[in-house]
Image (cartoon, rainbow, N blue to C red; front, side, top):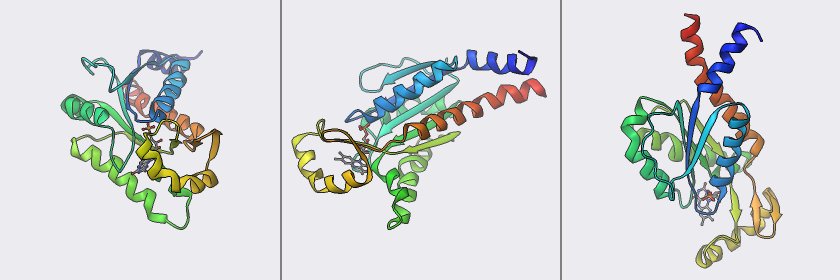
Length: 207
Ligand SMILES: Cc1cc2nc3c(=O)[nH]c(=O)nc-3n(C[C@H](O)[C@H](O)[C@H](O)COP(=O)(O)O)c2cc1C
């Protein structure tokens, strides 16, 4: 291993990543855990926390914080949003990324509605960052899992008319579960994120 590779390896090993997610039907949990596993496989220490169940005492020790949410009715989960609100000052001085799983991301492939994904990206990510005074190094905007088996009765009733459309544009991985998140795309996004974080100590070392 040459010196440059040793340095890259050392930077990777000391990196600590926190992924805090909020979910209503499980998509954000699945995708956040998948990315964390991928980061760990590369030697990056990664903690995943469900914003609803786990108490985060501090964000000081982390080099990168990814805050991750599923979207319903145009809104983040209140738990992920509360995390942003609580730690906005500390996170303003840190490397942060915001990420959403949402149905609107899938509309990027729908040529009949060219503006839908663009508007959603702005609303769910850029406006959220601006609300809390954050300048994220990246925004993750990826597809959804519509899990009819985990929806409340009233939600399922409201979504029933969407079922044929969802079945047409996604895979039904098990009865009532329509899957579009593009795990490979999410993993690539996470890798790019890592290279952005690594760049900083790298540049300083070369200066
Ligand atoms: C009742 C309901 C409302 C939704 N509203 C939106 C929405 O306003 N915008 C959007 O892009 N996706 C919407 N979605 C799609 C969700 O974002 C998608 O199912 C996502 O995977 C949910 O993530 P979660 O399981 O982590 O909560 C909605 C889904 C449901 C079931």
